Image 1: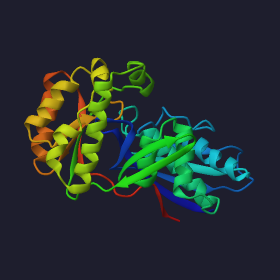
Image 2: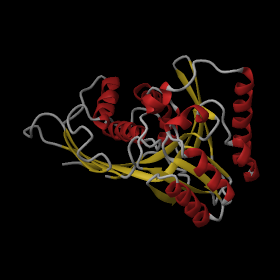
Image 3: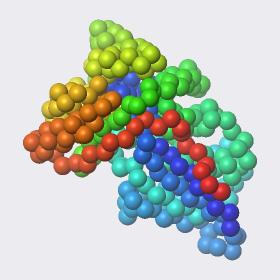
Length: 305
């Protein structure tokens, strides 16, 4: 039996102002093992899930990893071979850390390997965005680094930006889950020109700060008027934890994706920022987990055969 192992990173989308166009890979990884099975084994996929989502995520043909593999093989005009999957999930679900993007990208990369690597990374990205419905998380999951990605018709145009060295990410992951659908439902159908300019200028400043290592820009560059103010009622403690991170010396702090995770960018003072974020959460009655990690410079890849 042939076994391949694929790792896929967590991702954070938006980074404040970059709604649906910015995503960054985070150094937390899901691991997918794929085993080719013999024809005399039971029909259909055999899927084992460990870690986050065990006992909750589908273990039949509706599983998102399996569906992504099947999607790629349909693009080749061939049938997906019989496989067994083992998903070791270290990325929490429904917390704004790209668990679905990791599932999709790991499935696509594994299937592409099985198919003979017939698709290029940008083609995998377009498939992933079709499955996911938006490109920001999947761009970072597949390509790594910070990704600015726009769509023009059916075509996606990603630009990779490597974050400055020594940046750390302090992450507060609440037990509270926020479904992406709920977080999108609270957004307005239209925005003012002034709010549009506010966000567009900060996206530019954030990218410039990343490229030139002007981290002093980040406190302003991660500000947002398009989604975070509207999502705050879903997670009222957000504002308090934001302020605690800033007061403790974070370079910038934002809601990760649609939440509920809050992410602070630091360069030094990680333990202080983590403590103050955790204390602010405790004082507002929010239970959660703190992690200190960093941006991931690589995307989803086959790590072992």
